[in-house]
Length: 581
Image 1 (cartoon, helix red, strand yellow):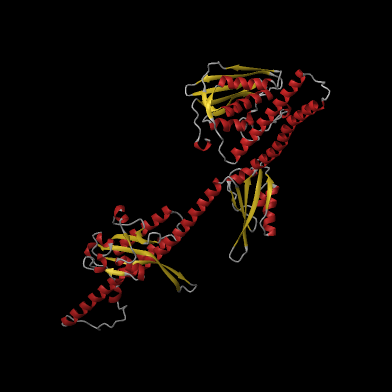
Image 2: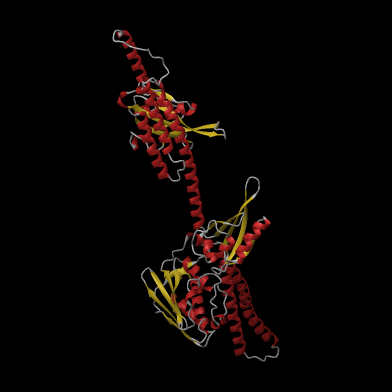
């Protein structure tokens, strides 16, 4: 630049000729050159700073999509700012609406994380609050004596001087005119190096950088929040037991969660963006989505899924924009297989119970009618007594069935079972059960393998009788060819364990986890189907046993060879409070 000046490139007039005899003119001209050089050096320095600022701005990415990327971008930014304005500390503070204060956004330069964590400033206080409220930058070169800085915690970090500029989000129109402005925080730079002072040029450069930084921070935070919220929603959808399928207005998949993929028999994969008609193999599911889109209305229907062979209730919902234009259809598929199975079981249960009630009633009615019609004394006393015993047995059978039904009703409605605790002699109780059951069969040998002096326990005698009667009755029913039904017991100290074994049909493996569920019946083959029952016996056994603080389980079973059930009961009944009478 100076060489350009000396060659006459500058438009300022120069003397035609200087001579040694004119020293005053030489001194004046030398002074003028010195001033020009100083001015040019200042301009060069300003241009270099502007170049550095522009470089810093252009080096900052316009899109930041993750928190680590934002951290790294801000780290590069604060280092550039410190280099450009020769500052020792650089802080970014954002307003936190939930806390009502300005807090440091990492990373910072020149202070520790512990110091940064202590900087929490209300927007009404100090230089930070002033800049945040007004949106105007503040330059201070004497922090110790500046009354504004005395209220600011930033000034307590051994700050001599500094600049605070607003982080402003500016919305511009097509002609780059500012339409709206919003301050989201402030930028602090403190302590200019080499004991120098900050100046207005530094303020101007920082305002340029701060505007760019604010845009990056705001966009990044919005994008990150949306991305993280989307990830949380997707994770929620993935963990739902219900199948969820969403398509846009063009029939392209926006979501198909894991449960839906399992329902459709599809591998877990990313199907977003693909046509639903090409991805979904189940015709019923496709039709439900396509009809909801075409008819622009919400639909609901049952779907028998081809993928996992289960029954689903499919319901669609429409998503519209503010102009009520259809944007997407979301279908939720809830597995109702168990509900439908229970409904079928209930239907079968009603039919079975009707049969179970009718059978003893028919028998009672028949014998009563026979006795009433015997006006001539055809039947002797022995025959009449036999008839009375059969009627008595059938009445007991009805009583047990009605008692079972009442107990199921109490359990299903959440009401407590009435417990009447007393000393129970297991040997005698089991003996009575076996004696009663023996009257219904001549093919079975019922064995009470419990010593007469076996330990007594505390419990509800009627309910313990009911537990053993159900298990022995099942052992007899599911041994249609006869065999031995044996009841054994073991004293375990604080508890006793009963075992009821038979030589019957056994239980197929796939039913073993479900046999204690209400209305569950084993009907895999002709032999099992031939056995009549209500499907509530073992369900009641489990509840009555647990009402004493005990438990029941299937110890072993082999199809065609028989089963063994175990019951464990405490010697001192541990009745849950809600079950006590």
